[in-house]
Length: 345
Figure 1 (cartoon, rainbow, N blue to C red):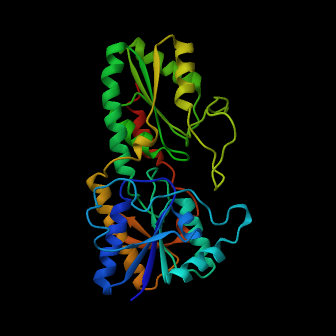
Figure 2 (cartoon, rainbow, N blue to C red; figure 1 turned 30 degrees about the horizontal axis):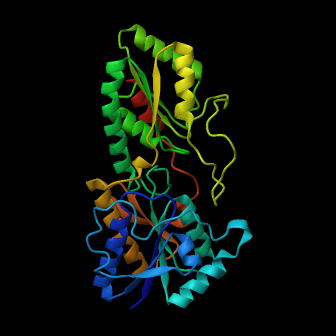
Figure 3 (tube, helix red, strand yellow; figure 1 turned 45 degrees about the vertical axis):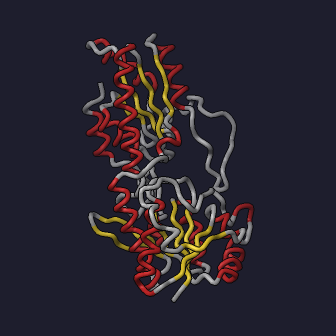
């Protein structure tokens, strides 16, 4: 019997509870392993703040959004701290034999560093942005796409009624997966993504051509990390960053609203979906994928295959090295964007 620690780090994501539930259930089936859930991501490990995870405590959480463990963007190595020593101290105090961190590139970069220092870890990939290397899909992504698609459907009717240009700002710091998938599904007339810096004059000209052909409204989907080619479009002021050095994004939708209305004369409104994309119950695909990840992570722990991350390749769940998974982000497939461009305007 072993004691396994679990934590959820970074932004919350539909499906996190399904991973926790699956890992615990698999561990009990393997031989009555015990589970400790650290509260608030890596902060819970640093502060030795945890709860026991039992069959009863994890029952009924499959459809719940968010995470019963809470989360944060804490970094054990921030400001030069000896994160490995702090983590080891807590694990020793709690009698924890191995860790299963569930998170995106920041959370798993901490896990990879701990592995290099000899701490036994198995990672589970999580991000609604779908930009984590090593896995074809991350859970939470399909739920976010469905939420955005539903929003675009609703904005279509009000845009057409008022003859407006509607800007829909969605999440996506480095990659435009959500913007492109939801834009295609929702019939967007333009999609702006981080991988393709855009020319605002070209966007304006495109909208004018569309309106000249007859339609009196347009839907523009923009990822929060999208930028003009000149990088001159002002979004959020200041240089606020998190514990991993990431700039706080947001505001490009509002900036586009002002510029498009000023340059075209078309009434324009921006909708920033923000954290609504992270909330609510996960769709069926994400519940199944998260469950498979939780089971596979526990199997890797029992097998002693540390320093790995569970991943989806095709239809199979596999294990990949954390180092390989974190080597570079998974950016938008150019062919998918080219498909979307066929329907612009």
